[in-house]
Structures are given as C-alpha cells and as structure tokens.
Length: 154
Figure 1 (cartoon, rainbow, N blue to C red):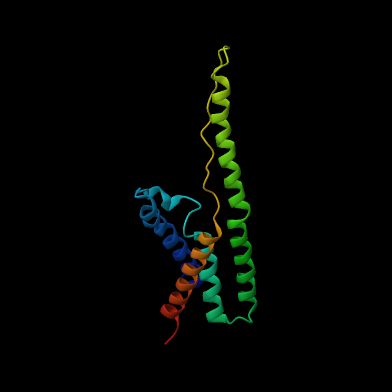
Figure 2: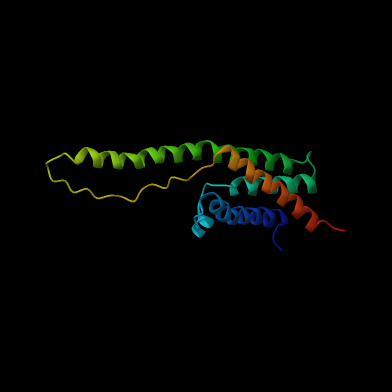
C-alpha cells in the first residue's frame, strides 16, 4: 500500500491543479482545461502539496517529531521558491517576450530584407503571487486535515 502522506499530498496537488480551471473561468469567462497541466496560477499546487503533507505529519507524528521538522522546512523552501524565484523568472520572461515585438517595430522602417525565424515564445506563467501561494497552503491544510480524519484508526 502506498504511503498515506504521499497519497494525501499528491491528491492535494491534483485538486489544486483542477481548481485552476474554474477559478480562471470565474475571473475571465475563458474555459482553459489545459491549465490542469500548467504551472503558476491560483491556487499553488506546490503549496497545496507541501502544506497538506506537513499538516498530515503534524497530526499523525506530532509537531515535535523530526518528520514534521523536515516537512515544514522543505515546505517553506518550496513555497518561498514558488513565489520568489519562479515568479521573478516568469516576470523576466514577459519582458523577453516583449522584446520580440520591439524588434519588429524597429525593423518596420529598415529597408534591408531580413528573414527572422521566430522561436516559440517563452512560457510566462511559471511562479505564483503571494495570494496564490497562500491559497494553495490553505487548501493543503484542509486536505491534510481531511486526510488525517479519513485515515486515522478508530
């Protein structure tokens, strides 16, 4: 049988990914099922996964256990990275993709024939805003608690 903590964390990640579709639709009236496999957006599946595992470990092993300490520190690093480094990378990608448009405008007045091979634009939605990380963390805590209740011995 698979590790209960892993099942809860993976289920939380899946639920967070699935919730991105109706949340995006509610904001934009645009139905995008491909968001299930996308990074970034609300809620953060990274945060949901690590916080559900940390919550489950806290409830089953206790907050004084090394298991909880490892899960908590790992989760904090993952959530910091999701909103920090990965978000900055996404913002930088937006600027790089805008350069292509700028170059096109520069070359409009250029009389020399120029054949440019356009690469695919870089993926812009990589990281998370703090509210998306918080949303994923709250979802994960609820999932971790629910997983604990469903798996505890009676």
